[in-house]
Image (cartoon, rainbow over all chains, first blue to last red; front, side):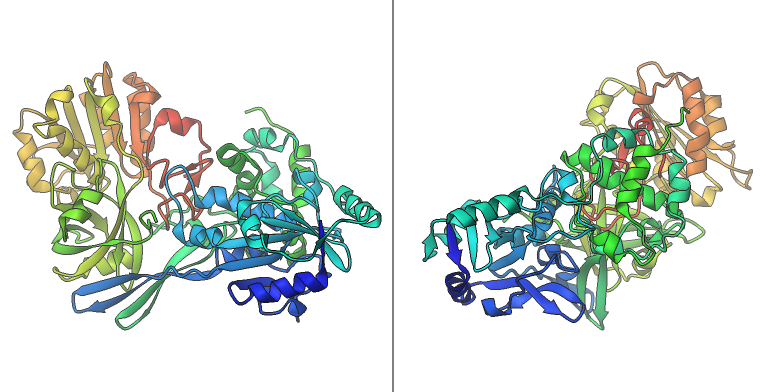
Length: 338
Length: 280
């Protein structure tokens, strides 16, 4: 079924009264996700946002709790606040990223309430990619520019209309009363087929990378790989599946807030003990950690590679490091027998 | 909603005791404020907690008390960072935050019916104390065979829990061997490094577990001794430290390979560590 963008826009604007709607908008620096009130504000023809929309479940900076000290006493207050949200215009890579983050923020022992309260109160509306960037390689990561995995409702942009696919119960509830649905025309079907069969032009081979990395912890490949990296963490901040964070205090006199902020494995202080010992004290060990975590540890722990092929780390790297070349390098690395 | 694992309970610092003569280690005794908090805080020897010094931050410390000591928790902490400094300077009566218990614990079920040799060095004796006190408790002592404790420090003044050690000297339920690195005035017990002393004592590995905690150099030279005494890696247990923030296996910094020291550890057997990359 499809709906004209005009009719869809009317429903969108009506939903804005009940929900906070986050959607891609044009900014000076490119496209990013922001709160919008009207469908007219939404950017339609975009490749993808500069930063991934993970920040709406896992903000770059968020209050965990606040406290007030009075003499020797203290009162502590939970700062978890959540709004009903629609996240519109999410690309398949980022929606897949949410599925990966879900397995991090809920593990065998703990559930992160800050992440999941937002996740549970958000409906994700995905939109297939009509354009593919040269840095995209999702087709190599087990899905495609038109995968609906991770979306509650999935749209395909047909120009003046959207093809609508309701994926989850959440999506069903949101779109139950959607008026103006029409059948697809023959041309529409052809257009949908073209978009659905599109593949990224850039490809990597991850078919054996996990088992290869099982044997590569002490490989000399890591020695030179990282030489030009400046450890800025741009790759981790731009990554839809990176989840590392720091917890720190912001204090003014007797009032304090405990906040968590994005952090990343490429920074030397990330693992520094108070004693001065640092288990990942060299860039080599940190690059190894990044690759091992995404393509090996994560697979062993969660059953999936923690890279969605969005290419943001390639675009944002100031020294042109390219994860596709690193994957290739791992594939080609010689295994040394100890 | 489930309990928020980031929200600490409030506990009262009832005693802030200077533990070692170099004044670098203090033992904090924290008191539960109500029964409910205490009932929710069910822990075992080897687990740790995140302590908040409000205004300064939160840091992970091993629990030095045993669950057989109700009403309180104790932590012996070296003054090295922002949080530990704030705690050292804290006035008794001040409220602190406690999040936990976190992590796994010593495999006490496996220890049942076995002898246990506890080997500790320096101030890495906190959760080992918890373990010893737990096993010595009259309700549990019958579950275990011989309990031997080999504990060393650079000098006598750096040994933790001196009064308790004195009591163990005469306790027939435990065989305590203390040692210091170099001779010191007034010290009439053993002198020598932990690995050497362990070799001298030569505890039998038959039906025995060894639990080893201490500075890296001590561990490094003690493990070969245990190997020589025929302790298999499955029966050598240790506890690791890592920089941590969440303590819940989410924030991403304390992993060794696939394992998060906070939630999959901190207690590991040498057999488990041999399977992991040497990145700790």
